[in-house]
Image (cartoon, rainbow, N blue to C red):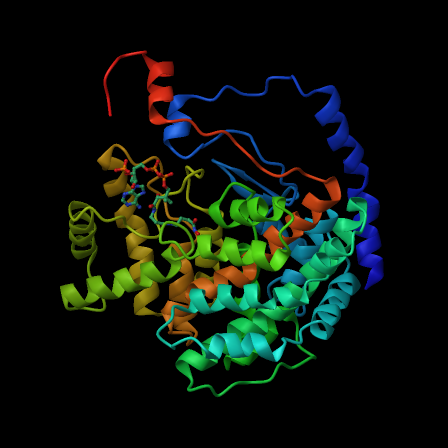
Length: 439
Ligand code: HAX
């Protein structure tokens, strides 16, 4: 589908000049001051990255090229007028910056289908690991193992001019995205269905095929999978999975290395692992309370107990957001529309009433509201995807869309190797007060 690549180049190449101009003519312009508080809390709010695909606002949530999640659900092409948008369309939007036509989206589906062959050695790498290896360990190892296929790496080694890096990166990224559903489904069937694998169906869309290869072939699961793949795709550039992918890519590592590293960041409990931690924590509380329909009072007691034990309440809080995550709301609307009664979903809804006032009363928690992970597991579980130790892999398949689209742009703009400065703790102490002593 060369025409989409050309369309991307035509639009994005206009920004190269912009980038160069800022770099050369406005290099001394001060845009922000950095406080010690920002350094001590993980560089929150320090503008230091260029990411065009999406932007996160603390009070309104994520927008993709300016479009909110409700707008995406209304405007992006879909297979069925009553269904959810296709993630192929979101990828096009993030890359090209415009809402695609139906035909563009079908063409991406077809293109990904033709690129989706996974080399045998990647399956061998997965099979070499014990089944007790976490699905995210298997997933990131498989991605890195696929670097043997990198056309960017081959082009670099053959001495290609740097102005063409983006072109090879584009192809690597398309191949990589195309293959992720097959890899994810392989891990799923290996771990939970005794290696009974299901071949891809080339007539299906990218997310529908993932559901199919996992063995969940109903229209309902495919609809959920499309929504899931759209809402998890990107969350601007500073989150751990996006930033890691960008950082590793900035050393001109191939996209397989960059995404593999990003996925290992996603695997952490404060990031994507929270989606399985939420379900684990809810089952733990149901078990301890002795009911699968706990009352709000029982839930409140358990939340307090979790905090007293020095643990976090998974699925709540956010580094940037200060409101209910619109990705939570989109999933809640989906559940309200399609699911009449489900004990796990009822508990998730009850927690939404119970948790925020408790977290709000702690004082130090910046955001007491739920994030995307508070809802996603309950929906997957309802539709029969009950193996929650797998859930972060699904997040990873989706997150690849945004971080890899950004990686193509990084190479097109010619962004430099990233290299912030670090200082000993004493340096900050001297800056703060100049007091003697300390560690
Ligand atoms: N439960 C208990 N304590 C919490 C909390 C929660 N849900 N959220 C924040 N806090 C605590 C922090 O641990 C921190 O405590 P210390 O000062 O003792 O270290 C304090 O409140 C201040 O933290 P913050 O400024 O509110 O939040 P951070 O930006 O540091 O962290 C996190 C943001 C999302 C990591 C945090 O809210 C958290 O741990 N939430 C639970 C885990 C979770 O749901 N993660 C997924 C987030 C969304 C995402 O990335 N998905 O992939």
